[in-house]
Figure 1 (cartoon, one colour):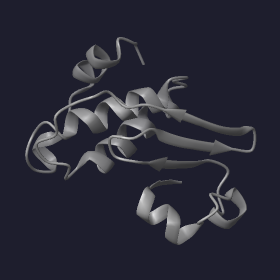
Figure 2: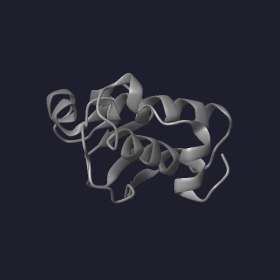
Figure 3: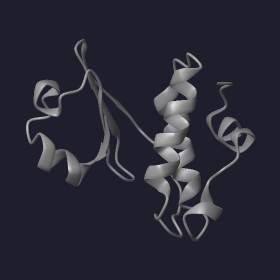
Length: 112
């Protein structure tokens, strides 16, 4: 389950997997760290620092990039998704802001 901070507070204020009815809970926090909670514990991953133009579409870019990377066995799926979300804030609008894969890889410095 991927949600932003506000959604997480409504679904599970205590960040509980059972309350979220999920095996993995990912909470995006804008420019703050992304929180990933699993049965093995919680980790936080900082997104790249950018000067945002428009945040519309950043969550969609994050979710799509996470889905692609994790489905391909990407161990750094959250880093990849954070980069996609950050890049999406650099362009106005939702669909035009979705970054291409090579740009995400360039930002992370990691192949997916």
